[in-house]
Image (cartoon, rainbow, N blue to C red; front, side):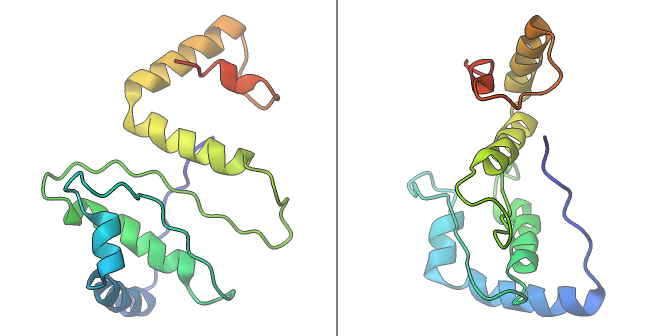
Length: 137
C-alpha cells in the first residue's frame, strides 16, 4: 500500500507541460479547486480523455506545484491515478488503498493506530473483505 513517487520528466516535456499548467492555473475552475481559503468544499478533480494526451503527466506537474501555491507552505494531498483499460471495473479497492495511504502519510497518528491494529491481529496486510474494520478510529 502506498503512493508511488512522481517520476522525473525529460526537460522538453516538462517545459511544455509547465507552460500548459501555467495556462490552466488562470482558469476559474483551477482557482476554485486549489484555493486555500477554507470556503471551497470541492477537492476532487476527475480528468478523462483520450489515451496519450498527457493527462497523468499534467496532473503530476500540478501535484508538484501544490506546495508552491499554498501561502502557509503546508499542503496535504492524496491522489490516485486510475488506468481503466483492461482493469477491473467496479473495484474501488486500489483507489481506496491509495487514498488511505496518502492520508496515513500526512497523519502519522492515524498510521500509528493502524499499525497498532495490525499488531493486535498479527496480520501483515489487509486484503480481506472485512479488513477496514481494523482501521476504525
